[in-house]
Length: 593
Image (cartoon, rainbow, N blue to C red; front, side):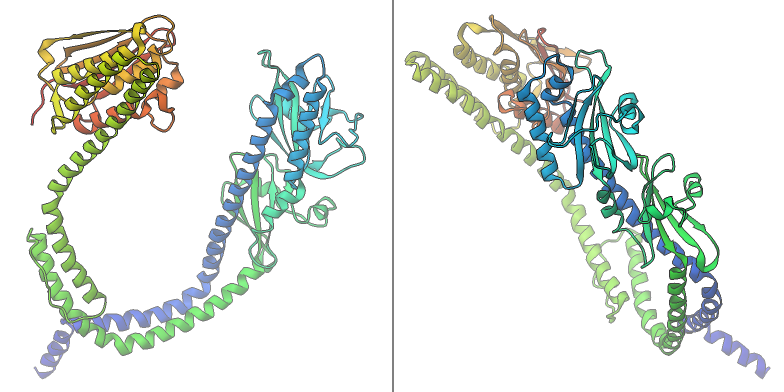
């Protein structure tokens, strides 16, 4: 009976959270020592290999990006030169313009002087015309271009430039440099689509080697590059490879889909990390010596085991204290969280005398609950204020723009001593300004907006005289529908600047309004010169239009309409060169306050 009571007391002690934490920590840490000692010896190598692979992958991916950016830059140079008018004239004109030839050579000389990584730059036509570098060096006319990969690929490639592997360039007499050639076919400008010439840039071998030398891991690691066919573009021991003094398992690298490949056995093995470029088709490979990785592995194992032993001792000494310090704060925090879970966000000031993570967590919990309660109360009010502020800010951009254009017209007439017209336009402007600022509401009936547009058109008609006529045809059934202020005027101004201003004969602008499918529709129609697809595509973009196109006004109106009515409403444009333009504004026909 006595033994039974002792057992019950012993078991009962371990029902408390303090005892459970102490016993759990002790068992887990002691178990960790055994597990770490046995397992680390087996798996540390794998960990080192994986970490090294990940690190190397990051490096060679960055190097691949650097190479892509470098090739992008060279492709831009190739595009600019091949599309140059002087180059086109030189290749395709029957007569050779000496001044054009001089400008081309001068441009080549500038490229060579500013870029030490470029060895040669030139253009070659099918007819045999050549301009290389600055023209001072003798061209190897005995070279059969049809045997040169960079030349034939450029002519046969359907699109874009081509990139060769490293090779010896023979284009300049007496020079045999190792280069990588970027070449681009030049199409006949007659429109036949045939390539009648080639522009090429020879990149110094050192340009690529400089990028690769920064990507090695360890003292014996190195990087090399293969092209899409498995040919070596760059290798630090390239001459030794050609002399078969060194080998690389290129077939394995090209055939694998993995990011890493391990070859060889034991300390003599190699770890290949692979990154492929979709742009160039090149494969960047980093080769790491396995012997170096294993030496790091043994050091890591020793440190890991020693650290585990120290952690066991520290854990046993402080596990009791940890259990006591954790229990009370957790219990108090748990009670408060239950109240929050039930929807009571008034919980605050949970008293926890603790300066560790639990104490910090408790204080953060208090701050969080108070902040949530405040945010819930402020959210609706702030959202409404934000919407109103954005509308006011957008609306405030319109008046100065319109005022500038109108005052510019008044100044123009005043300089022409048209005093009566100045007085009439100034009076009309004053009426418009009074109308635009007389109502502080952000919306007005469509009738008010139409009258505002009528006044604006009256001013513009005075400015353009017999070049502008306008008509207003608005269904009375929609005149009462609310519309945000200053919508029609920017669209009308845009119609004048885009269409009617450049029309040689008198232009007509029509404002229509009618109900449709439960919506109210307003249209601004002009019979001006219209807009091409590019201008029409950027009509809403305030960054891609000039000042006189009133892109700011159209962007402003579109932004305000969608902000106020939603994404289903706003402005749409229909236009074509010579066919006029129609701007259609759609808003809800029934609106709730």
